Length: 93
Image (cartoon, rainbow, N blue to C red; front, side, top):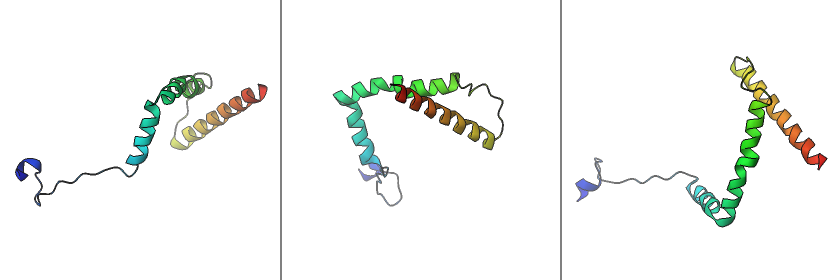
């Protein structure tokens, strides 16, 4: 039966796991729990909305920026503006 289980020359089967496999399992369990499902539904309101705002309102997709350094600077400036907007909204409450 050994020939059916593996094709390796030394007839050993190797099972590899990612170094963070234990942690990803815990995160998956949290996400699939009842409270995790409620929080995950709010993700599109909080996280995705934030990225959409930066793309649409900050014109990130329309700016004629070329070069890795310039694009990186533009992304950082957009993120800084986005964070200032969040802080201002939070302080206004």
